[in-house]
Amino acid sequence: MVFGTLYTFPGDHPRSIGIKAVAKANNLDLRVVEEPRIPEHIEVSKLGKVPAFHGEDGLKLFECIAIAIYITSQNEKTTLLGKTKQDYINILKWMSFFNMEILIPIVEMYLPLVGIRPYNKDSVDTYDKMAQAAVDVVEEHLNNRSFLVGEDLTLADIFCAGIIAFGFQFFYGRSWRDANPNVSRWFESIVNQSIYSDVTRKVEFLEEPKLTNVAPEMAEKSEAASKATPDDVVAGAE
Image (cartoon, rainbow, N blue to C red; front, side, top):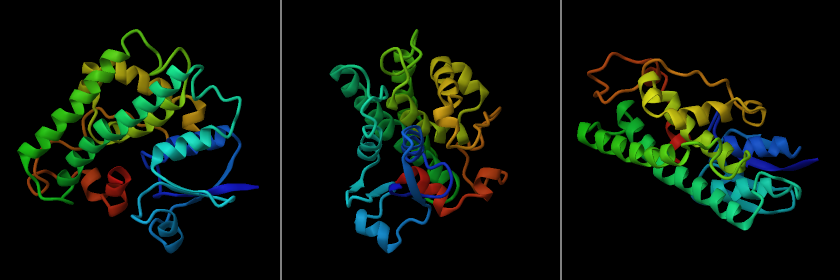
């Protein structure tokens, strides 16, 4: 029986990966509609934000963290929401941190580099530094830790790996990974867990960044730029 409908974009949308992963882990049948801003989607999310969820029982949810928590909580025996109240609140903390402090600056770097927004070198550099400052917090936190919260895999790891995957897709080449070993080790570990890999394409790690801080009209046309579509952009921006 279908549990509900998830409105998202085609492919591996950063804010939808974790939702799909925990739905599959909980054996919940999600109808995934990869055609956003159709009337049924707007009925759930008036601003047309992705992802959005409409349960068969009538529940309407927007905001990715709320959806992820709700889907995860359908399994009353789940360990993905932590063992204690402190675990739970720390899971929420890291999900919010990655969603706001890491994804948004990365998207603001991406948009001008593929010609979707006007290019300004200083602006891209500023967002790069903002994203890196947030990653530095995670890098320090993961020193001698395998997971974001506690000693076991939680929703924080699954959701946050999906978020930062956008950076690994376009910006984080080998030199970046060498400079950020804890985040890179953690990310590689999480994306190779079956709960994650079962709902996504295989992660291909970059040797060199696909995008660098060069105006699109000055750069050689990269694969990322030449294939950029509005869906690619909104995949991070929504």
